[in-house]
Image (cartoon, rainbow, N blue to C red; front, side):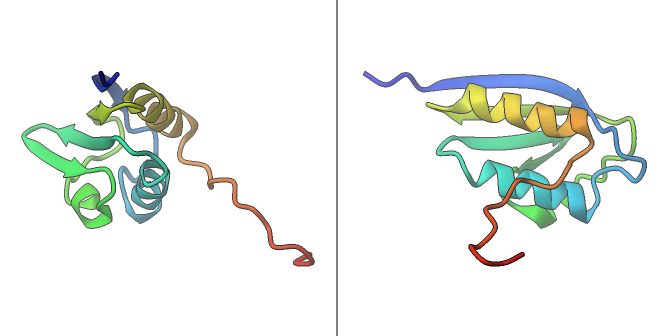
Length: 102
């Protein structure tokens, strides 16, 4: 039996320019780390969390309310992490620095 679940949460866009290229890139990079699928809804528009251009086409400006929805075994962790990105203003994701690359 699977523990698959669907989780939703509403968040606010806290960036002055809304969901532009950088926040959309952060969302895609983060969502790609999970097995669950995720979507963002703004009004009647829906975008796959792994599709940067779809995210940008939502047209969500500063202060917009976005519904995050994920489905799968790690859906709760994915939605919580995406919500954290929104809350923190989309900081750069931590990356492993190659050895000797100082």
